[in-house]
Length: 231
Image 1 (tube, rainbow, N blue to C red):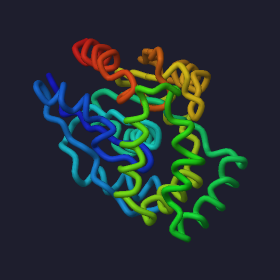
Image 2: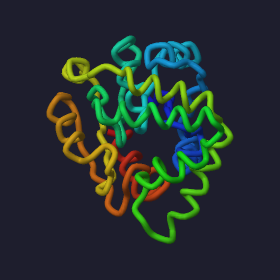
Image 3: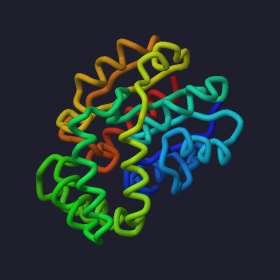
């Protein structure tokens, strides 16, 4: 049976993060995009997403979207038929990363969202090459359109997130773990740990991609997803 695919975007991203996948998989699946939330905790955001979802579904989350996917499968494991965790992190945020968020929030409150995204965040998203300049421009556009309130609330949610190690151990559904080979934000080692924690999991490393393989290597990623969903 083909269950609906629920895509959950990462921080300061919307459905455009998954546009190549939406275009491909909407031909054969009902595709849902997690609704935008102004809440400031992973728990609250996940509840808002759940209110919009069908009874049973496949979850596909990238980065913060992967963290939300882990929270959703924690809340309603009986409704999640399969789960895809991409370029994400099951661990609580480190003190070092938390300390960086405070000055970022201050700058964004002062109207400097674009500067923060350009200088402190987007530079870690992609493999550096000319082809990816358009992706950077898209990411900046998404962030500017979502605005400072969402940036601040998502930052707070990520800073306060829990460790999902025990939740991953309890996952009993087919699980696909995906990581860009050059992801500096959520490195391969974290994804290998996730593979070891989830019983029925497969790990795929995407070549020539960093934190956003959905946009960096869409054809390669779509092929992997398509084959795995049919298993």
